[in-house]
Amino acid sequence: MMQHDMPPQDSDLAKRVIGCITSKRLTPRPRWVFTFKNYFFWILGALAITLGAFAFSAMLFQITFVDWSLSSVTHASFFAFFLAAAPFLWVSALALFIIVGQVNIRRTSHGYRYPIIAMTLGSMFLSVAFGGGFYMAGLGGDLDEAIGDHPPLYRSIVAQERSWWLAPEKGLLTGHVVEVASGTSSFVLRDLSGQSWEIDGNNLSDQVLSAVTSGEEVRIVGLPAPTSVSTMTSASVRVPTAATTTITTFHACFVLSRERDREKVSSPESYDESCENIRPYRHLRDLGKKNKKDEEEKKDAENSEDDEDDGEEDEEGGEDDGNDD
Image 1 (cartoon, rainbow, N blue to C red):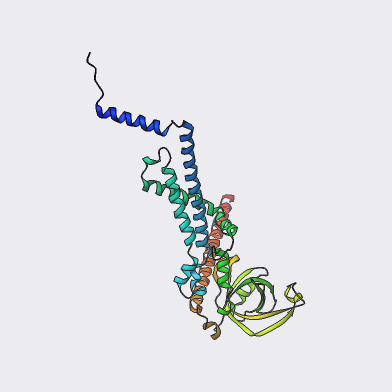
Image 2: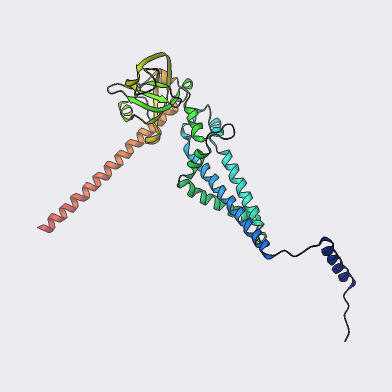
């Protein structure tokens, strides 16, 4: 039999490989190392997608918490409002975690088989899907509250929006109603800084004033009256801070309640030149009219449904009478 010799080039390659293994003292790794590495990258990928889901839930909370319809009230332009309200941090965090997730999944044992675009879209889909569920469960707001307000590193959207409205020099005021004086068109409000205000509601309708309840958080658009200061006893305003409390008068043109309906705007009952001088007066006036029209249409729809139900009951009653005969 003829003996086939190994080609010279293959022989040289084998010698070089053996020499490299010998010189570097390379030894085979046990299987558990590769198994551990595979699971490790899968865990990192899943963790990154989960963090992306939390970022998406916080992003949804920030977008839905602020009242975009009132952008002209708190800011000079919609662009300024957008820069202040848009969740740039959470969008960046979502993008970062999606990239980290797909990079780690790609480093698993079979991750190299999948296209980068497919893994990126898959990671995005999972983060958005789980993030939507987290938001529905209220975790987006909990995350915003847990991080807290730490400017300039992070500004909570809740604290940020309240700072927009706690600007009486701009005609904006927010706080909790302390006392509603019966038979009058005024009520006492304590703002978020602890200062008390006597709200003059002469320009508000009786319907709006009757809807204001003690303990409710409201936002007011109007005009401060720094020269009109009244001193009331703590018992009359139920503020247990001192024997007397100095209250500055604030003329209310519009009242908004977050607890009842945060987009509900009350239109002034009568023409008031002082209210007309407020920058967003026309916008709020139109919004108030729209809400009033929507309420009337809603009542008409409810009344029509009640009439239909009564008609159906009358028909059923007539059929029963016919059967009895």
